[in-house]
Length: 542
Image 1 (spheres, rainbow, N blue to C red):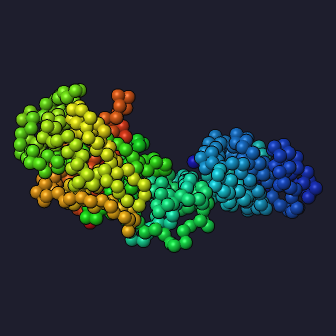
Image 2: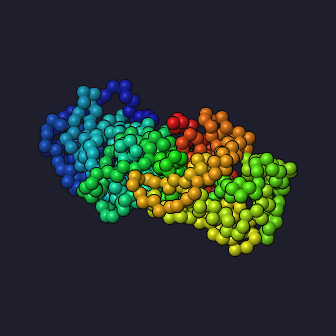
Image 3: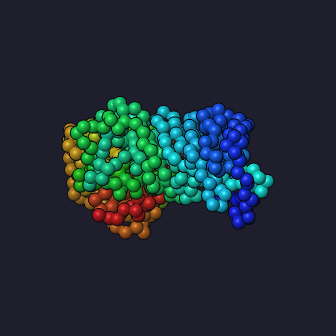
């Protein structure tokens, strides 16, 4: 809050004698010229002989002229709070990409206590979008030395700017189609920023319309959008056949976007979908604009891929959950593989290997699978590597035949050339716990050219039990105190020697499967775990 040390609000005021119209005009002209051209900018002389003190009005107009010309230190010096004024004017103008504001003063008014108010119209050209027009007022007070200053307060910049609310500019560089969620609620990149790149891709969205954007009033503490102050672009390019009805759920989408705040500013992505039909409930990306990494990204899935590897081993009867499969610190297959934090579990069962995500144990079972068998299982039962028609462009995964023993070892733990993304891993999770693959979809009526075989019921049951045990006694304990019969799998995926590992987690509860990746998150439980915990905490189990 600004303090007005030059003129206490409760000090008695000294009223100045009125002047003639000629004197008013002369003072206004001189003051305006000295102020840097306010008069020359078309603000003009006064016409009312009995109007407010011309020096006050001239100071207001000079403030507007300096602000419009970008002379922010000069404008701020004309206020009772110059330091704060300069900071706010600069952040407001630069932060909203405003170029060359046009600020036009209106008819001044004088209050009973001698304060002067000068209304003005602001025409703010937002770079590349359009002009934001609004009205505000400048309050002025006479100081003890007889000079007039703009009585600084946030609301003079814009009536809704305050200590609790600020403005934010959102851009949509392409024109998305109009869309609704599964219940008919309107969806937009303004209300759900993570959807901007998704909606632009929907049903051929992005074909013309030019750049779009909005100036939003948001809560300073939470970032919640309170209202849209101005919208720009594309209103005449909306589809004539009405909005596209998506499978998204506005509650899940909002919760997913909030949950990604747990990623601490790292690149991250999340997908939630229904297990019984593959319908996508939420797609969230951080940062929100730009690349849709949740659906189109290509990542090594790390140990979340052990769900598929376990499925392949269980299908073949190559291992059972209670079989002992030792978990040493290291295992060398062309290169030395190790567990996260070089952990070891001597005499562990396969269940323990799964819940503790033991790399060396899984790699030791590589001989149980034929060359290329892991990819065949992924494709036949989980749909990975087939062509998906989601409703937006998607990457549908790749599990190539290993080129050598080292690559085969790496593929057992979701490394090597195995590639996936959150959409794929959410679908893998859904397939594992239900036994049946359903092509993920973002809109109704998408073509389905996939062909898969259901998992045997006993395999699906075993996978569910393994994932549940990972929550109750393994690396996904971050979810253990949440209500519901939650199952999960963590993953840590190497990227390069120069980068920290990516962190993964997949989970399921009720009829929903979710997957999250946090780039350079180091560990899955430590980075993606809090994201999924936040999501599941925010949305009740259906």
